[in-house]
Length: 536
View 1 (cartoon, rainbow, N blue to C red):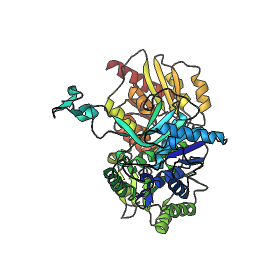
View 2: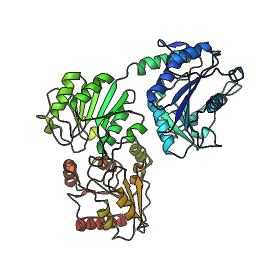
View 3: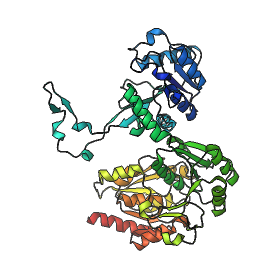
View 4: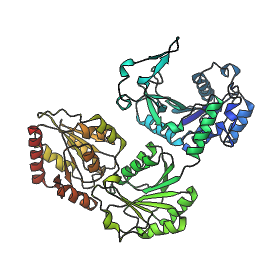
């Protein structure tokens, strides 16, 4: 783990709101919220408050920060920028023998700050070649429709050409959210903060409020009361591995986005080939389990004061669910796509083929059934791609194929499919997989023999790949919903028993499907697909 430091500048001479940094905000000093968020993130080796004020120093220490020095007066006036304050703190620490890989500047006036986004910034920056990541939020109104008031008290648009354009047709604009700023200390950049070398971490507008006036303060208090104090604690129980695959986890991450205002926890085993890093990248708290024993999860529910639990796991049965419900009184949502018995408040089968009536004798009378296309989970990037429209310009000399047989490819058929595709001379093939795939090295070695094959591992651009391809080869699993959503032609090959329902649905609706991999049948379908594309 890289060494990280958080620096919270907090001078004592605030003018518009006197003693702002330690003024009580919902019964706590304002600065306490930034310190506590940094502590909850569990990212930092040190959390430093840079202040010139003894009282601020005392309060900062009380809430868990370190104050190793009092800031010099020349760095504590109304004109000193944050950069100079942070540089001073880093120089001081370096002289004491402390150096860091990543530094996060956190403002002391951010009571709505959520450690989830601090963590997102760290993990995104760590994986990238950028030098900075910082908090942003969207503008509430299109800047392209703004105007100024002239000297003679009239209106003048900055961009009058946009007067007749619809708001939804104008590009969204963002602003600095003023909460946190990450910097990779091992990378130097001459670019401005709001430039190409910075990663924006997008916060919802209800978590952003500048506090410069008493009116701002009251608005922030209202938002805190409405959003933060009413948060629920939600726990997802899901595993991923080379054997299980990553589909369950990926759909849970989509569902988690529907609970943005709540506090999200994930409880998972540390299995071989797991994809738990995705949980961390999203900024969620990951609680690593030792067993799949119901007593362990009941203890965790009580410790975290969970209000709502979501189970997405074939290894958890109705008896497990009943014990959880009876001993914790937690509200329980359970994923199911096998038509098994469950004991829960809400049953979710988000497959477009799901049939509510099949659950009538499988769940208690109080269970709410959420089944079918109205509950299908689609990742946000796919919604954005659909808005853009189909990108593809068909070229019969280089037909683009997208291949994804699950993040783990537990049936190990990627290479078999590639053997079939390579019988055709005009195909450009993008293969998407993850580090959960046990056979990833074999796949890499295979691809090196062919210039027309590219392997993408742990890609974040799947929606774009699918939208750009001429046709896709997939399994009839979660990804089938997304391919259908983008209206991309496809071939689906069943690789697991839990795909049977979706396989039958696609077959009934005349889509190209195979019940199992078959070289001859696949070759014929690919031939038919190519012919169909050429005839369009």
